[in-house]
Length: 172
Image (cartoon, rainbow, N blue to C red; front, side, top):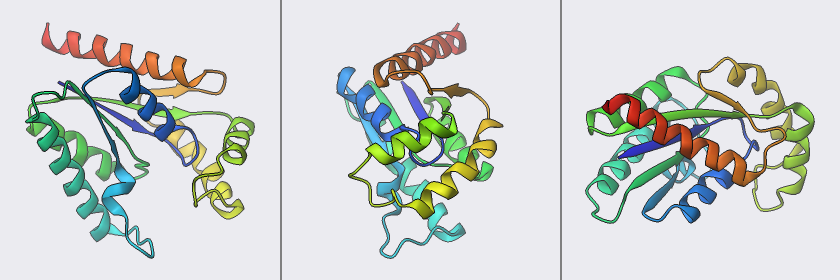
């Protein structure tokens, strides 16, 4: 079973693409990493991130044992290498295949996507500036996909195709 990990800056479309994949591929479990770190007020320190990673891996393990689950999609902003590595190592220890992709887009596209999203409480000008400043960091990560001119469905299907291709290469 593949676990697709979708990373990237705030507002790039991780959640939208992850939900699209889950909605269009029966048997797909959708995990938003933010659910696993939903403290009020928000605290994003070492302790809470360790807790969130543990929560994520626990959910993935439960989905692995579910007979109707065929694929898992995890979306989360992972801007620290140790967080990504712990999740990947944990997925591997569950004998599942992690397939990671980092979504990117240009500054203008990020601003446009940000302004259109009226449902997320984080869509403030302050957080937009933080997200824009994070683009260079995310562009240095492995398996980047520029989604600037891709639709949600195009992005989702490229990720799914990459995941099936990667899974076949690992098992051959």
